Length: 180
Ligand code: HEM
Image (cartoon, rainbow, N blue to C red):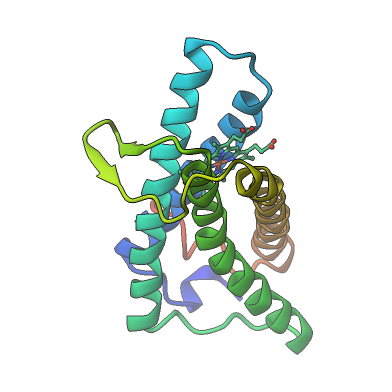
């Protein structure tokens, strides 16, 4: 089976896929790095950029979900039923986490009482009242959900590589931007 035998994702879907993949990877790495920094101007700066990137990811995830619910996907690739079910479950869980990770991060920030101003220009609402005990309770959930998302992303990438290079069914080619 060659990649040309399966239709490709649209330009919008491909753009959203790779912009979010890059933004999520960078936000995850910055999140891990900044959390252990001592109090300093650099830490505050990275915290702000992390929050701005994370809320942008939330907005882009909403666009992506809207696209997903209003468009037809290319046909399923030929694979055993259990693999197709696992792939669908993984995709569903990733969509859930695209929302849960930034929303829990935002709830944590609100609970700490720090106002969130998107890129320093657009004040965003606090949807949780400042509460130190609540902030401490929420904090580990943000990291744990981000790790769950990272684990699924690794599985997802491994499956894409296996399909492309072992099964040779063109799974990766139909979501890459440049394709002959
Ligand atoms: C979807 C995008 C996001 C990803 C992948 C992500 C990932 C992470 C990770 C891995 C950490 C380190 C956790 C730890 O080691 O304890 C972290 C920390 C943090 N994140 Fe996010 N995050 C995202 C979005 C957000 C958003 C939208 C906000 C707030 C508006 C936010 C606020 C924070 C804060 C304040 C911390 C530091 C917690 C602390 O140590 O005090 N994050 N994030």
